[in-house]
Figure: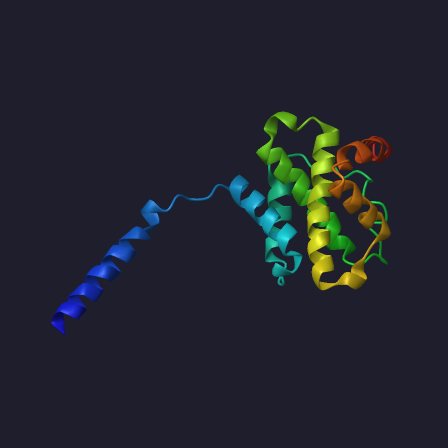
Length: 168
């Protein structure tokens, strides 16, 4: 019996040593931003207390490494009558910023940055529909079809050009 206790203590010491804080690489705020953005794309409802979205908005607002411009490219979003409209709009913001973090040389490419934001919203939209099929939005369904056909970027280009021009 004492050997079992010694073995258990030894195993605990080994496992504990692997989790020492000094050995865990700290995640950068940029990496955390991208990770949380992707998490919300996959499961928009995982942020039940809105703490993730609050952190993302605060970080993007205060960061000097991204500049998020919101162009009118999501059709009926934002809109009061659109199911989960605020979720889809904020996801566009997060996707826009995450793209800039992952592709710093493309920050000035309005089409690429805005399209990335739309793709992020579409990922969240698909996730929402998996549990709320009644939340279908015709405009987003059209965008999903374009995405599936691998023509989304070319479809979005004139929409982004017009939507971003209106905000200038």
